[in-house]
Image 1 (cartoon, rainbow, N blue to C red):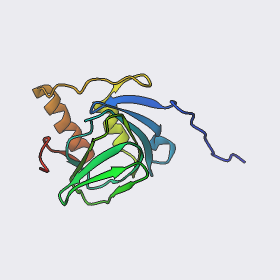
Image 2: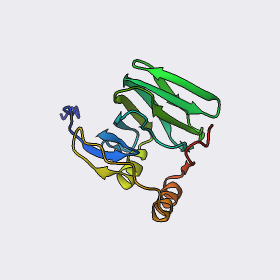
Image 3: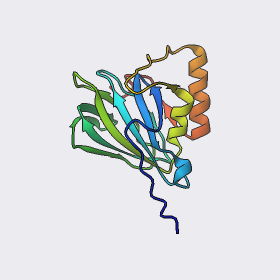
Image 4: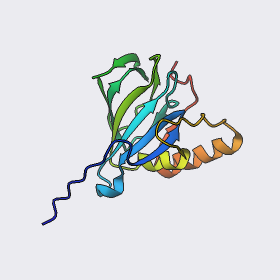
Length: 163
């Protein structure tokens, strides 16, 4: 009888440059019947995604290293290593920024899986420890983001939207 147990070593898995950080897809949805996916996020100082929402995805973050400022419609909170954030189903607008002077590391779980597919479409492959620059927000990039948002039932807002 097969146990189904899988061990994923450090730095194994697809690593993508997303929003200025490295997102390592540790457990993709195709390994969990799309029930969940697990992503390690290494975010440089000042980095993080723009405000966004995804009504059909429950997302959690465990801060492993550093300090991140999580922002929602209710306000801002600094979450340090050992802190945990949960974004419930329903489409709460949220974003985060690394407020540390060094990289922040987060472990993100999404349920159901699917958000990792967004990262595959918007990100670029990078090596461990490499950081791709944040892509310029051209008209072509805006069009791509709008198509991805529509395909995955999410919405991306401009930086500063929650201020």
